[in-house]
Image 1 (cartoon, rainbow, N blue to C red):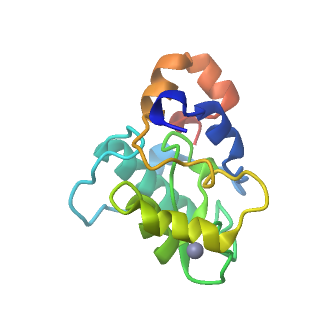
Image 2 (cartoon, rainbow, N blue to C red):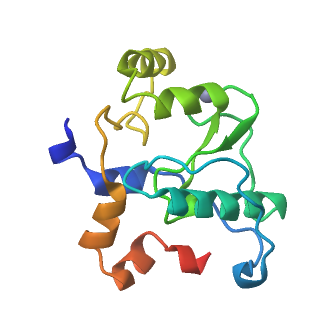
Length: 163
Ligand SMILES: [Zn+2]
């Protein structure tokens, strides 16, 4: 599969669905500061969008509004894990990954063989959000912004203001 026929709907449907465990008031939340330099785009999401999602996600974890799973979503090992976003517009869709899987995933455009090796090791027995990723850059952000109007986005995938 290539960028041209990448199935964005399928990726969105395969991402995890976390529950919000308590009411959250983001307007009055004291979000953590981003201590690192700006990020490169990922899936078409800008550095600012990615950093905002990191702040919200870290805050939600800190206050116990999201339960952190025990294992990495890709390798299933019990290691320290953190959230990884494919869809930065809905943190409740974020998988949790160990450091190793996380960096191999982000570096897959430059080092596709490490990515394929990892996929070979974990043998997903069914289609997963990560088994359908490709080693070309996709633009999920543009898909979400262009294809769906705001109402549809709210209904289908949730949007940032709802969090
Ligand atoms: Zn892992």
